[in-house]
Image 1: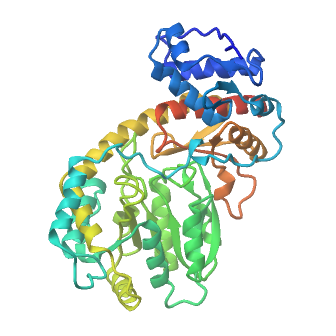
Image 2: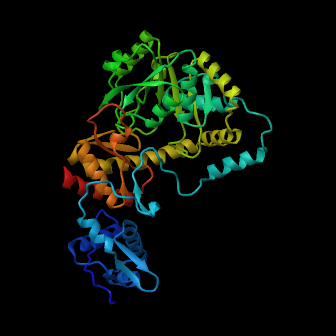
Image 3: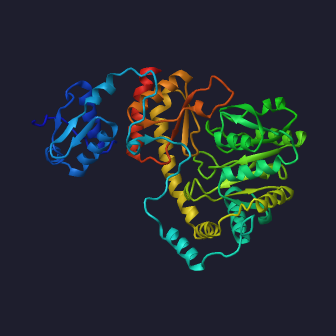
Length: 462
């Protein structure tokens, strides 16, 4: 079969990259019917010659279209428009489709996953080389963490968050969820069926962790500024703690104002409860400086949680909590009893990375990247609804009617773009809908493509 000729014009002044322009042109030709199912495309070599571009440009465009299911290739016979391509274009979207077999080819806009450098830095290699040179630790480690590690975390918090914590009041953990689990276990020791107040929509893992530790949940709605502290008075007498993400409410992105922070601190004192403050991505703020932590505002009433998952990488599994001395003592006793000891090699490596300046370098590099992504999302989606969380973090939430959000997500999934629904983070609050656009792990071309797919679906269903 002879190759079908394609009329494509590439514009080097276009803000889209050449591979994106080419894949857009071929996709549009398929949608218009100019390239029917089974049509054979020119070879990458022939097309690159015709267009006057490097062969790699065509290969990248073909790879993208193959990943989306528009085209496919057979060894020795060329590249063809797939039978499924036209089916996808004309199929009404009523239910979420089955995920494609090659999941790795899809674009996943998952919030919470950070950008990490494509290659290990000299500081990363040096940190693990130094750990290897010290030999294997033969004794069980300090259940609170090595003293020099806690001192390093104390210095980091003072320098980056203005939070001054005695190293003795810090416990090293394997991440935020682990820290929350330790806190919930200790806080619930002297109470039968304690109640945890949570934001809704909110962080599902925190709710699951609390339930696994025997807590009941009391949901409090959030608005564009975060937790509705004016509704805290309805919390039951069994309330023992409030879990909150004040620096960048997850997942709606609100920055809890000072008046609400003060009200929350007053509630904690009046009702004799603790605040569990999850400061999960406070390093990434692009519009204003982060507000002071609740831990600084209400000392003695806050368990403060932090992590390197959003900087050094989600798989490093290193975090911390700071708490009043009596609670730290309970947590240490609990960890000793259950042999829950922090890894010495990981502690040493992370300490090296912080002291070597790698943490700061990664934050600066990621902040530049996320600021650009933040602007990119705002430019693409601001016409379709209220955007929350702009100016911070690694995701932006588009508030929509719940039914529209579900239709848009289903349509995007048919084009190999997976975008989480805000409804996935709700528990008892109904009528809340939207899309959570995570951009930490996608590159510029992937985000551009995903946003075009989402815009097309929003135009259709809004």
